[in-house]
Structure formats: C-alpha cells, structure tokens
Length: 261
Ligand code: RP5
Image 1 (cartoon, rainbow, N blue to C red):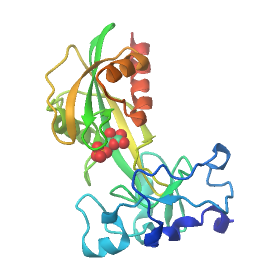
Image 2 (spheres, protein in one colour; image 1 turned 30 degrees about the horizontal axis):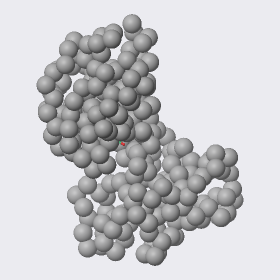
Image 3 (spheres, protein in one colour; image 1 turned 30 degrees about the vertical axis):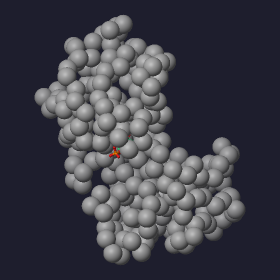
Image 4 (cartoon, rainbow, N blue to C red; image 1 turned 135 degrees about the vertical axis):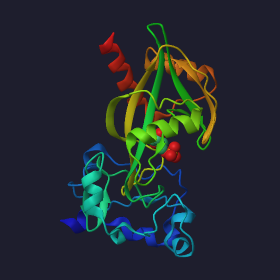
C-alpha cells in the first residue's frame, strides 16, 4: 500500500523536474487529498529553489536552512514530531503534510516537515474604531500579519515579541498576549514535505502606536478591523492584496473579539 500512496519524491533528485518556486503544483481533487487514499499516478511538482537542491547543499548551506538534502537523512524525527505545533506522520522517513497532498514536492523552506512560525495580531481601539497592525511583505508584496519563523531554540512567546519589534518597531515585551491558536498556514512555499505551522496571538492596545517598517517589511500600518470584508476593502483601496494564508488567523481574531464584546 505504501508504494502506491506516494511515489514521486525521487523527482526531487532529478534536476530536470524542478519548477519555479511559485509554481501552483498539480491540482489535487478533494477526494484525493488524504494520504491514506491511494493515488499511484500522483506526480507533484518540485519547487525546490536552486540554493536548497542536493548538489548546492554539498557546497553551501544557507544560514536559514538545514543541511539535509532529503528528509530521510534527518536523524531526529521523533523529537520533531513530539514538539510539533500540529501533529504529522512520516512515510519511509519523509514527513507528510498534516492536511494531505499539496500538489508540490521538494523543500522551499528552511526545514523539512514543520517550520514553526509566530504571528502577532495587534489590535488597537474598540467597536467601530478598531484597527489591526499589518505589514506589506517585501518578498511577495502582500499585506500580512508581521510574523516570522522561530529561531532554533526560541519559544513562540519570544518570537512573537521579536518579530513584531523587527518588522514594525513596536515593542510589546511587557504585554501578555492571548494565544488564539496553533495551526498550519497555507504559506506559498508549502510542499508535501515542508510546511509552516504558526502560533497566532492577539495583543489588544487602547489606541494605535507608531509603527515603522523594518526587517522583511516594505510598509507597516493600521487598517480598520471590524470584519474581514471591511479589512479587504481597506487593503484593496490601498492598492494591495491581503495575504490569503492569513485570512483564517485574522478571522479567528475577529471571532474572539466579537465574543469578548
Ligand atoms: C507565514 O510566513 C507565517 O504565518 C508567518 O507570518 C511567516 C513566516 O515566514 P517568514 O516571514 O519568516 O518568511 O506563512
């Protein structure tokens, strides 16, 4: 059964099979998403960027990435599974995306398996006068929560504070956020074997504070935040697009705020 569940990863070693990192991948019908459903012909697209391909890794390992060319070389899967924000399984030493097939293979993130991120959602004001602090990412140009990956050994609470400070200049180290959830994020770099799971947390301020775009941010600013539609409209009016992967996180924050009021 295992031979038919997933067969395509040898493609990761074939240089002719690589696609651009923003390739959408093959379409995965909903009824074939689950790993337990046999799909012998499944041929996900490899989006591994040049810097993370096996040959390149023998020459140089980027400081944001692990050195293993394929995940079956990773020695500590049991520990990574034990500490994962969202549990996942392994198949012959390859980690499987917790939500099933993605249509893409290879690695376009620092780590195989789960890449832990932290997403601080900072809200100011109440009622009609409520705002959320967002950045424009300088890599893909979308408006997003000022989050980022955890550094090795770093805790989520520490990463929430650090990322917020680095990307917006806002220091909320003395505030206690509300953890809203730990979830897989539909990050654009996701593949079957490397994905992002994030701790999202809510900070509530009485009023806006000054935000300045820093690391990884082309811009930082406050947007009206009573409904997702209202936020969408404001982001569109600013000539930008809301990062689709962060919509569920922002929706959860809105639901929490609604329950509170
Ligand atoms: C998102 O990318 C996560 O939710 C988090 O906001 C961010 C982490 O990636 P980097 O900003 O570190 O590239 O998917």
